[in-house]
Amino acid sequence: MARPTPENHALWLPKKRRSFEVGSAPYPTPGMNEIVVRNRAVGLNLIDGIPWLAYRFVLPWLTFPAVVGQDVAGEIEAVGPGPHGLTVGDRVLGHALGTEKSINRPNQGGFQEYVILTTRMVSAIPDSLTFEQAAVLPLQLSTAATGMFQNDGLALALPTADPTDRNETVLVWGGSTGVGSNAIQLARNAGYRVVATASPRNFEYLRTLGADEVVDRNSATAVKELIAAIGDRFLAGSIAIGNGSLPKVMKVAARVPGSRRVSSSAPEILTRLSALRAPRGVRVSGIWGGSLKDNEVGPAIYNDFLPAALGTGAYQAQPPAEVVGNGLQAIPAGLERLRHGISAKKLVVTL
Image (tube, rainbow, N blue to C red; front, side):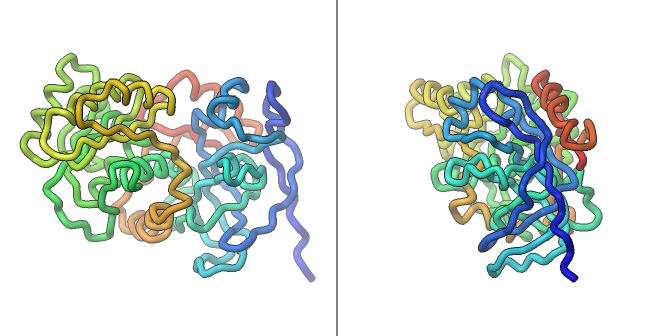
């Protein structure tokens, strides 16, 4: 006898100017190179809870009713055709892409019990990694990888299980953020030396991730200290994360030997305005965390690198997860708390 189709529920955005509502959702069917995951934990990001007016600027293509959310972890419930090697019951994390312009489908939004994921953006996880901690990774990992490895970003060498020491430095401004925590680890696993910034209370945390030198981001002499920390080593590239970081990172890139490429996580309009004031020779590019789904970087990170790296401990699912509730109905309150600011942790809801 065939198993009954499970019931699915989602956290819906019914229309513009409306609040989130929990309601029934169709049970999804996977297509080519897609899987259905039974979500056990979801991570919360600022973009998930932006005010309705902001959708006109950040996600102007989004159609309603919509299901947002990007960070998910759970078990594979069903698999579609394709040479992906994933099977029902596998424990995975994945980047849900339902709000991407080229997709724009609620059945791929993360805030629901059963979600469709594209296999290019899915990684198997070891039994030792909880779903709650695994859910901290996807969007922040994708954002860091996009800025660092895509050809329109820093175009760095990809991470591997046995990286070669390149004797080159990557600058990460905002190392204690979720994106920064991933940028540090990705750079180290690609063989680069890392110089980063953070508040002093997070210095040791950054060192556990692999940062070689850490500078106080609030120091009046932060730019000079970073230049000294980089020294005469070749700068392979820089990533600017957080408010006010880009002008300072551009100054550093202009004054040390090496690449003058800078990737910025700031909103597109702010990145473009800052780029107009960039020092001579400095090239600034913005980051869109979902773009790696369309090129070789996505599967290189999620399929080729991450499963084994998580299994051996070469890569940590960081920053630490803080569970702020259980069930879809707990997500709006978690997003409201996120808007007030957090540091060196990621808010997660279990399902």
